[in-house]
Image (tube, rainbow over all chains, first blue to last red; front, side, top):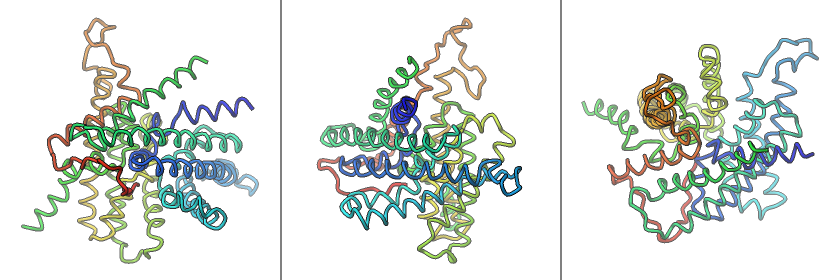
Length: 204
Length: 221
């Protein structure tokens, strides 16, 4: 149990998706101007990562991994090169299903972050979650924890950045630094802060 | 003549004036992650430019046959197939760099830059202009990656392409490596400063000041 909790904390803070691994930066920067939008994006990320990473884990273990077809008399078949296409397909489909389910059962949540859900199909952080799962060969439970953890880390980071940026909207910045420039500098400062989590993990 | 000029502009505009990374916020994810050394930055630039150009060509060729409702899926599948080819080539011939790039080659599939260009340009233009536009954007992306990768490797290790440029203090030289340059925050700072520098020279790129929080949501990815 503590191992899983450690994995959750590691995925959320030490290997924070946008700030230490630079994943999903496009949405991270584009949707962090208003705190409400950022919050919606964060929740959507938790849901989608929490669903797609374990789902892709099942697909990878059952169909794509080397030796997965040995029950059918094909022990040498290695389909892992197909994992990119399979993962993208799973992600696109599960985003669609999630959208339909939310629309049917929780319409208020659906209207809150409905705009961001389709965008998440082509979000690098989501695909990266699945690719890391393969690279680090997580089990099914571990991959679910890892997905939820990295989604949580993303949500925290984007909410914090949005809060800072909304305060900075009234600041008098140099013209060239307005908007994107200062967002990068802010992300850099936050990333420095998150680097201290890595130190704590190393000290343990 | 006018047509030639047009092609030239399509190719050179994305280098600085319409640069995909510094102006359009496209494709930043991979741009920052792979720039700890110049060699990985260069490999990533070449892979992305090749994938982008080929994908734009293919999608532009079949643009009249893709139903509008499923075009995103079609585009993603085309891009993903090209990325798989590149990934396998890198694994076969450049195993070391491929390991350093880790998952980021696979992530070209969801690079906003690729989908952004195929969606906004290749879908409406003939193959040749589409490929020229893709090549221009690929080069604009590469330019940023190489500048940042070069700076980070030069100041983080005192080296370029793995050969020592500045003599290190440990071996009797004068240069003490700035290890911060190899960590994540410096990539953000460098790109922020680069954006600032570019926008100071080309002032038409400066964003309007926001005295009220904007209601507009920019299209992402």
